[in-house]
Image: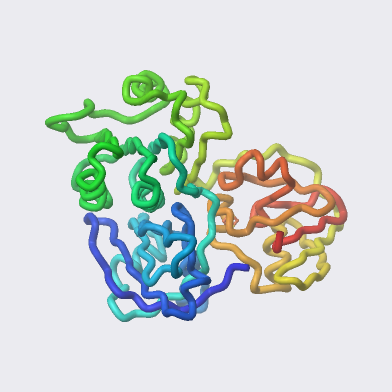
Length: 354
Ligand code: FES
């Protein structure tokens, strides 16, 4: 069950003009709760002027070994989003010693270290979870190799430049690093330009043996992730080998087809071992209905992107406005995003504990 705790800020490192890395200290009694897998994220919560805001940020530090202690620190990358309430606060105000409300780790864009060849295609701040994935994998699994393809606008706007260069120095044989800049010429490496479907379809077979890659990790803005996924499908990579995490989706984007809504409906939800049944008000999502009655219901983005509000649909039918968080196997297994779900049947039952 996701919980919030207050963690002190141990360091604030500026990465670029518009991004920082925040290091949080985890006290010994909370280390088990903050044990995370490489690729997971943390939701940060802030209440300002009576309004609560939550944002999720990926952990960039390596994950602790399963047989050792939980993490002593957690490091997340935060990039400024224009007009973004939390990122503006993070870049301009957060200082060493401040205390932040931090949810326990969540997310399924993860890798369990195992031998083999892995690859990632990332854009901008999409490097953040992949940095944790690569560093954990290469440190823990001597028989693993990784090809990291990153796309940024310019060198100056590239997050975690030093951390990635350090990894390349430490694992010169096992880490292949490919950088593409869209707005700056490089002395060595690939020509300037965007990484779209067409370019990737031509480029990938020249860079690595595509069919031998055990897991592909795609992370960044919607357009890049979608283009990369289509390129991989063009190259006949099985869907099960592709993992995706989208960082930003424009507000209007929807994946749903409309279904008629019943005039009166009710949701039964089980959360942290306790259940309840409540009427759904017109137009609201099932998460909103549950939150009105159970303020401890888990959520972060309310936008169908982070997956924190995932619940199992025990009975009934729902329509999701959009889903950029759940993999096809999860929706087929019966999971839904409560923040995007609206009832199609008069009775709907959700289980947040499964
Ligand atoms: S709260 Fe992020 S997907 Fe629902």
